[in-house]
Length: 234
Image 1 (cartoon, helix red, strand yellow):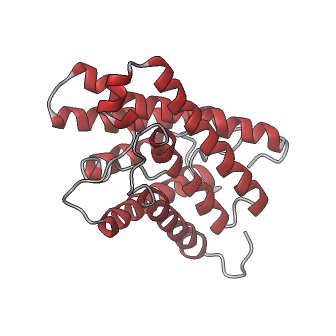
Image 2: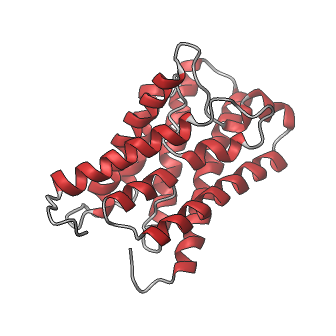
Image 3: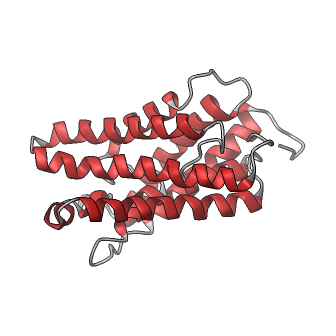
């Protein structure tokens, strides 16, 4: 993270970046519902909207805050020694607030009938899965995402492609499991719109536990295997 940028500026970037990502990602579900179409086309649309939305939001904020825009990613950066504990806590709060603000904006802008039909763009768990299977899938998908975050945006050896690689990881993950868990990989992306769903989904914790486990595992793997840190330093 750029040391010349104040913490307040970083938090503002995390808030607005997460707002943009969740607005586009969750909003795509509402737009796709209005447009109609077959389920396969809807899955592709969701993958593209979430992936491209995140790529744009990360690219817009990476120079200020690092473009985490995801509490799980922030935890993965903490575990990997890239984000101080105090900053991590503030990042998570800013990201969650940005996601809730995006959910509120969708509620204000779209007809309630459309929002209720797609649960305001929040992810849902397929009846084919148990809760633990949903958690495991979210963990695996987030492991992929956070590994890509490290390799394309955090590692000093990374290519200068902004948020493109991260967005492509989201597209791939949504195509893999979008119809199973919604492929949120992000507690803020899941819970922001979910706060406006009534009744509040009982499976909400899947989108916290799974992504945090996957992100922490990716942070450890990248720090101690791919970067080869052995002395416990960042």
